[in-house]
Image (cartoon, rainbow over all chains, first blue to last red; front, side, top):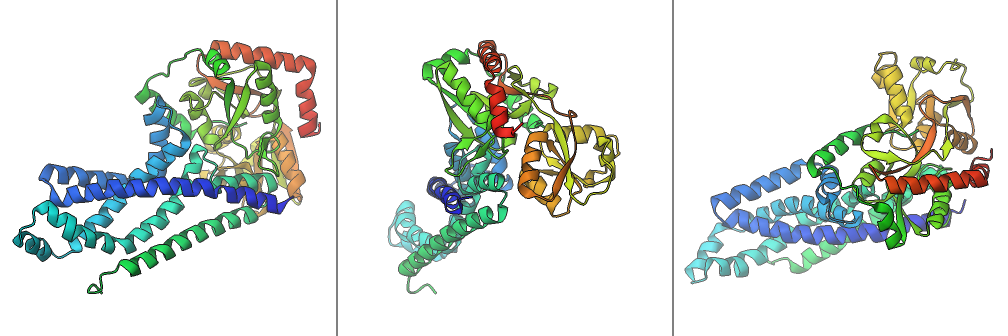
Length: 214
Length: 261
């Protein structure tokens, strides 16, 4: 058995893992931020709706949502496993990211909004120029947790047949009967991905930290 | 062989929600496209597996490639977990699946089958030092048993041993893949592994320290290619080519190559 070849085969799955993450995480951020703003600043009905969305999406295991989207919703649309998987994970992640952003918005003290309004800013100006820039900074640490979770959850798309790291490790484990080698390789790759991502986000947080904020 | 359990639920749901997928003429569509999208679960050597360079290969794969060639199209392989295959055929995600599957009534409700291309048997595998008696497969009731989930073996054990109350539920372990069953047999967590005979023999050869104590047709039988429900043209085309390949001895040669029969 050619170990180097097999390891290379598993490592090539990283392309899919990173691809799924790069679609799911930003789309979750955009959707999550939008919902968080709506949830905090809009009327009762929208607030209720966004809360319901968040509760539901966080209450469904990602793999179930994945199956629903791929086999049921996209039954007649020709959505590839890769896109179905990425979008599903993006939807799940958007609910968590909504909570992260919402928490960050609420942690900016209410007095700032009043102060901004007092100097003549409109509500949307105040959100754009005063609240939101602080929100994003505050959201980085919890967001880096979410980034790690999405990277790890990307392994779920194997269930639809996307040849990412985990699925490749399974195939190698089946054909070589060397599960330890295959799964250790997969674990090492995931670890490196998560570790590097967290380090980068830590650095970003340090750079952007507002000096007055401890 | 491999049988559906969990996905039947999903499938029923799928059908209920989406409504019956239109059984259009896939054969014409496939020939127009010039490619045939075939699904398999490449974790079942020697029927389908990944070789050193990452290519999908095996008995089923080589057979299907030849069928594609005779249809005048290229075969594009899609790998997915076994449990997802029938749903994928039904939803048109893939044109067909060849994955060491055999006909069974439950599956027949949602998909169709080609004629048989090979006949498979079941095997019971134990560790070398096993001293119990398994000449009658029903004796599995006295041991801890393992099988791959969603397979016909899983179905057979459930129907014949678990449901009648002969084998307690907690003494029957279901695994996602067959190599996991073998690993647990090796680790001593189960006493008997039930699987298809050919993959079982491959596992015995590769793992060592195991033996096949029984083989015969219990849950298995003819292997078929699974196609969308009601697709008569495609079925006829496949059956014609399978018959041709059997007559030429192509399938027997493949069996010798992969199963060293």
